Image (tube, rainbow, N blue to C red; front, side, top):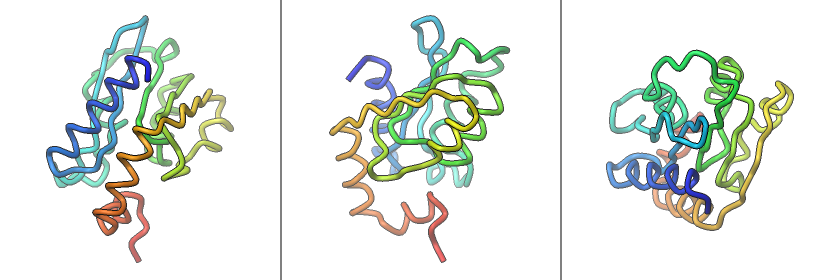
Length: 145
């Protein structure tokens, strides 16, 4: 696992420790983390505070995003993929997409390079969470009926 995905995984573990959903993200520019965040929907009672959104908020106004890379432990959903496209982030590196396919096609259709590292550590962390908290997971991905 490279150091930036390691930082994203650290954010995911922080969310889990807080009682939230274990997804983390970091925004990188010129080899440095300029923003970090984790899914805080549960902790903040905020339906859109996904890891990638938290990360972008914490990065603040960075002007141009064309030289940034977003790392996320899980393939972004359409909400987060929309933010990537909106801000022109050209590359997204994900820890895994086996547990959630997300919006890869949407990202790629909008010219975003998507790299799926398919990391066992990310897959296992998310899989355990889904087994332990299926209702919360379904709520997070909008699957509750």
